[in-house]
Image (cartoon, rainbow, N blue to C red):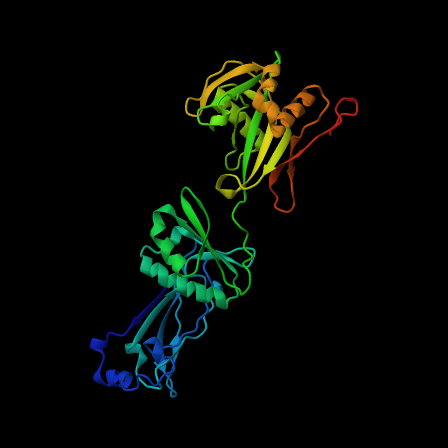
Amino acid sequence: MTQLKFFDFKSASLSEKAALMGRAGSSPFSSLGHSVGVRFSQELSSCRGSGVFTKASYSSSSNGTYMSKRALSSVDKEKFAAENYFYQINGTSVSSSSLFSRNVKALDACDDEYGGVVVDPDRLPVNPDAFASMLRFSLSHWKMKGKKGIWLKLPLERSELVPVAVKEGFQYHHAERGYVMLTYWIPEGPCMLPTNATHQVGVGGFVINDKNEVLVVQEKFYAPSFADLWKIPTGFILESEEIYSGAVREVKEETGVDTEFVEVIAFRHAHNLAFDKSDLFFVCMLKPLSAQIKVDDLEIQAAKWMPLVEFVAQPLIQEDGMFKKIIDICIARLGKHYCGLLPHQVVSKFDGRPSCLYYNVIDDQDVNCKGN
């Protein structure tokens, strides 16, 4: 934050007033309303560390240039580097210690690995005016240090700061239930920050029992053309949820039936759907572990076990090329003429994190599984 505290004009001596007012208008900075020029540089504190600030008092030199007497707060001085602050008041020689006291503080933030800055959302100033001053100061500071992208996460309870940030040039990146993320690109040229998430991910559970019956549902909310359609349970996976566990969960939530994941049979990629986002939809084959149905009253109108022949014979299934192809693939898998994808836990050296890689393993002894 930059807090510039000019001297109390009422308490200044007559000579100080005359020295300032008598030379007003002769400075190249006079159009700004005062004749002060500043340049600074300071290292950011860590995201969770104390804020770094410098309190500078000023003394005059023979040529009317005022140099800062720098003092640091109780922070790690190795993380702090400050250039001198230069103040010039039309060449007037006055006692600056009675004129200026300035506290300079940047927003608490940390560097990211791409030359950018991530502002700490838990250490934002309370006052919007103070936030505006700190933000302007920080942007100038980060620009001098050659920083690139700035990430500013504003919690829902600090929503009053959003218009302040937008006024300073920040743009919306994405929003969740509890926050909005804004960004600012400092260098000239096109912004190189990654865009918001482009896809939503859905799953469908194809559950078939030993009687060759498929677990199907009718939803409460549907387009009129789908009024008579019985479909497999579907839904979106949750944040940080695996595809296979999401399919098992959705079937359980909508029908009350416990299942075991078998394979990913196929997936569909479509564009410009909800909120103009792209959509990945994974069809998963599941094995039932229970049979009793308990319908989710919030989303589902009805659920039942339906003979596979009746399910396939539905006009909407027969008339829709994609639905029909999905069913054909599922039937081929039941006959072991098709191999789906299984999740395999792997760890990449790029990020050191475990993840699921989906691929099929063809048993050489199983000549029926061609994997295509």
